[in-house]
Each structure stands twice: as C-alpha cells, then as structure tokens.
Image (tube, rainbow, N blue to C red; front, side, top):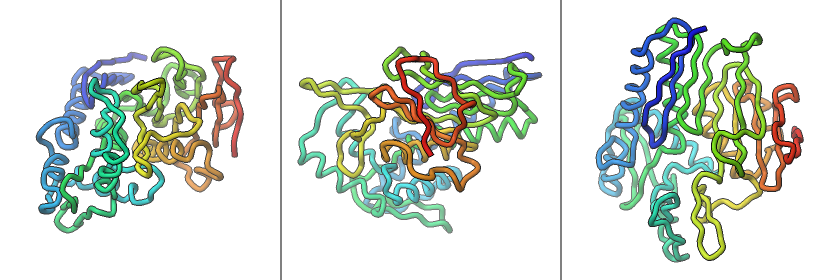
Length: 320
C-alpha cells in the first residue's frame, strides 16, 4: 500500500505525518495547518496567544477565549485539581528552574516556596456560559504543554476521519497516534518501540504490538540539569517544587484518545509505578509500560503476546 509522509516543525519538535492509501500532499498539509492553528491558540512560547492573554490578565480579570481553547483549558484545570501530579498551572515553577535551557539553575528553597504559592489550581476559575478563564493571583500562568499534544493529535485524527482516511500515523514527538489498521502487517496491528532511556533516540528496548491506538511517553532522559554531581530532570513535582523522585525512567500509556494518554502518563509517573487495578474499569485505556532505573520493564494490563523484549539487560515482569 502506498505511504505518503511529510515532516514539519511545530509544537517545539519535529512532527511526522503519514497516510496510507490514496492520499495527497494536501491531506498532510491540512493536518499541519490544523496543528499550527492550535499552536497559535495555545502556545506560551510567544508573547501572544489565547493562553498568554489569560496569563497577562492574571490577578486582573477573566478572559474570554475560543471554544477549543476553553475546552482544553477547563479540562486541564479540572485534572490539575485532582492533585496526583499533573498541574497545568506549574509554569512559574518551570520558568524558575529552566531545565533544558542554557540558563537553567537550581533555585533556592525560598524561591521555590514563593513560586509554589502561584501554582495552586484552586486559585483559578472558569465560566462555562461566557467561555472565560480567570487566574486569581498576579504571576500565575496557565501552561497546557502537558496536555496540548494529546488534544491536537486527537483533532488531527478527527480531521482525517472526516476526509475518509483509513490508516495513518501522527507523530508529535513523544506522542504517537496510530490510526486504523496497520497496512504493513497481516494482523493489522502496529509495532511501537519503547525507547531505551540509556541509548540514543530511536533505539528501542522493547516493541509493543497493538491495534490502532495512541502511545504517550513521559520520561526523565530528555532534559537534564547537572550541578555539583547531582542530576535534575525536567518533570517537576508541584507538591514539592523539585524534580519528581522515584525509580522510574519512563512510562508509556496506550489508549484510545491521546489526551487520556497525556493525563494517565502523569498519573502513573507520579505514582512511581503501577497503580492497583489501573485501567480495569476503562476499555479505552489499553495498557502501560514502565521502564525503571534499575533495568526493569514492568507491563500493566497488556498481555504477554503484546510485548517483545529487545534488550536482554532488562528484566520483563507483569503487574496486575
């Protein structure tokens, strides 16, 4: 079957869009344009966007936004209030550490304490009737980076479905949506690599074999700050103000919707490992794979036939 693939830059990463069957460049370009449209609405890396308008008005007044921005912002705030580690208000803390940038630093305890007062999701509100978001305190910031890629991947899939496309792949960098049957395999399942945290990007330690799904990974191996013999990764714990400390190097969640994968990777990463009965009541959560710092590959909800270990230095085990 014919495969058409193009690469674009957006959302701070390299994006790869692929379609199988009778597709044209315009089908990919339309998807790329949709991604750009959402980035223009949601980015906090430019002076102007709908999210930045909310942030600029923090402590002053509510801001009315488009339906799309309101929908994702409202969901992000609600999930943040569940207090399991996901926090869409963590922006002031992220900007304090600046991990991943040349001016990254280890802040003082006082600096962290000050910023922690600005990241409480209870200090913001939304108005369904007027589509308004309000951050109550000056200096607060809404940042949808932990959920936006998932939301956007779902919308790109909606677009392709609307045009009758059957099979495709949406790779937003750490966030993969595999649509429809995989045309290269007789069982129509996709092979998804689990990145080896200690190897160059693209080198997998295991392969997961599943039908159409989203695969979202959270890992500590991408961005680091090295200071005085200590290594600080970029996943900050909003409860402490410091990088989350546990035995996980990464967690990958396989789900029907990519936005759910974003939320659940955060839930499981901050839990430090498998949660009892995770996903058992939800048929749209297919499974999770944990990679630990001590070379374990822990699989939850997936069956043994779904996973193939590629690196013999890792020990494979299954969790309920």
